[in-house]
Image (cartoon, rainbow, N blue to C red; front, side, top):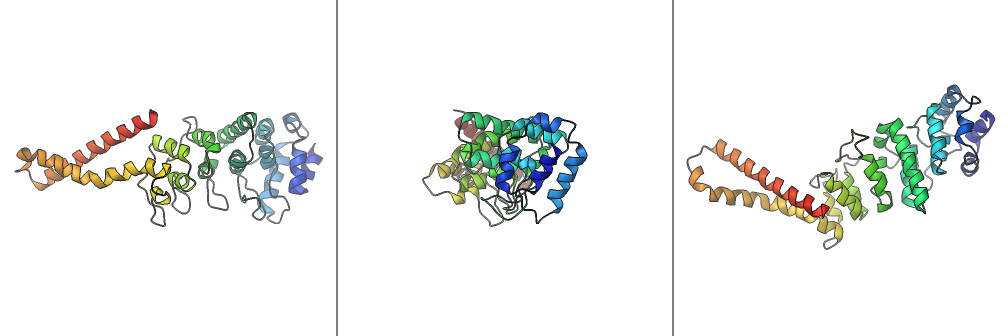
Length: 285
């Protein structure tokens, strides 16, 4: 078995994918390969940037939809945060196995059984290393950002924010300052957008280019219509606050400015809370 693993390390990508499919979890769990062997493979893929392989064994196990093999490799010490090597190929480079799993959901999964296997792999990877969700690939995208690219990965996006795997900010940004809402809007991914808003993502955050998520949506589109009410609320908030203060003028005429400002803030929070409750009710309906 160890000879086969060493051979895989040096083979071309296409051949490695075929060979890994022939390996099962019992092979890896057997005494023929130990943690030292896996450690040497980890070192090889981290240090040998000129390697002909694009993927590590763990990447190939993910690509071939083999959750048992993924689990066995991790238990033997394979690094879940290890990144693929080589130049850009097929839109993927410097990606963790978790990036690979999401990319499989986005572009290569063709039926429900394959989807279930890939989600199981994502669960295994998250259980081993939840912080892998935050790793950046060569395009400066985390696996979570990648999951907003189209609705085929919506199940993965929801899994990333499952209470079993806490610790990730719903307003997570990439190196360009783009939130998950920014990416979902750019990719015209309405299901992801609705999920993120339901999870209390903030649509009023700017990226490093000074753009809001709504700036990526054409007027009249579903994405624009979903985001528009959040920005209408901001524009009308000040007017609503002043109107309510006017209604209370008998009580505030003689109030000092600091107290008046505090009341203005209280009204603002009340209105925002009411709007948020209304939007959540709309999303749930």
